Image (tube, rainbow, N blue to C red; front, side, top):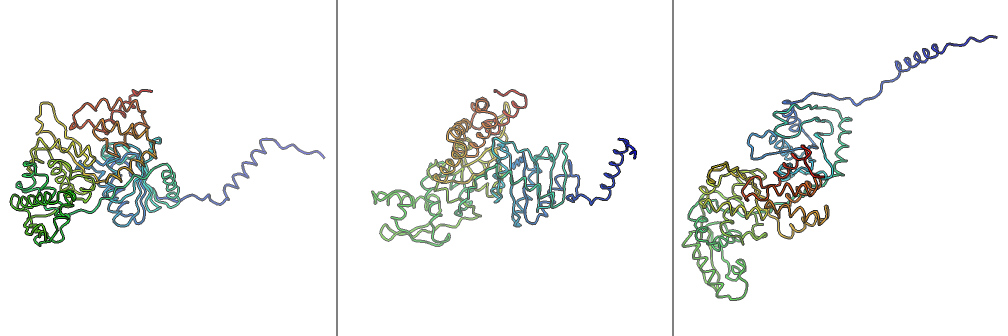
Length: 485
């Protein structure tokens, strides 16, 4: 029996029909259902703020650039970071991952001061994400960094996507980030003592002590505030031997030390009107701290732990003024005063302020952004400086933090970074050293040294003598292809 040969084209057609039928009647492929919205350009800020404000349990943020500029009162990024802080206070768990860019340091410090965990990605890796995952359900992703330009000027493309399965996939990204990052160290701020603001406001008190170089009386009054066993206006009794120990006089030359204490007590009573006292060397002395009109501010107990009491009286007065201004502004926020206004407010000779600030900066006690001095402009008319008080870290804890940095990056790398930081007046600054480490890893030590050489010759109050300006030089050279191999 003859069999007909089926044409090849007919075979292909039959296969297509069968495949079509299979596809037509096959069950639907499961996909993660999502709701998506376009929040590009000027829609981004309000949309992200709203989602953060509505967060219930967890917020994870990965941001390449998070530039806070706390001294810029109109900076829109501050509204986003303030929303994170408010969410933290509501009990929301918040984790922030930042690229190893020195300009992210200010944001890191602000968030840490508000008990938010911040991780820096390893300097050898560029983390270019702009991703937010909220409550395991909401994903915000696109091109927008948290910077002024991104939020107000740039053309950006961003999406808000809601869907638990989709969010779960994005959450896995944060696990990988954590494996390739280090938690920025948190420095706890110790308790403080209440210092009357009148001590700084009254020109007959601290200002007079500075003029008379009476650092001993200044130190003694602060010690009495620290160790007072009763409220102002209520006497408390303390022995001369204990007073001698508080002042660091030691056990030798007892009567000479007691005579010194008598002179200090007399000056605080008669010259400055800060105390009343009565008693003798044998039975002790009953001291009454006179109540001063006005409010108080909190001086950290670390003032004594780090040896601040050993500074010159001018630097101590400026430091207390910084503590007071920081408390008025808020922890982690930059505050500003021109040298002229600083001098008028605290009755300190304005030419002595830069010297005192320089000493405080070199000891890693204060961060400063110097105001720009325009050509042919008198120094006391220049733009105001911006200040940020730093936590007081005892010597033992500071040594431990340096050792931890060496364990992570090696002693040679940390030594190089500290030498570069010293060139811009920040040899004791852990943040500055870490910033230089990141710059070395990213651009190479030779390129960093060349950039530092461009700014190290400037005076200590020149705003360009900073690690941030060095980073800017290197970014510009990299973009122009002008870095050495």
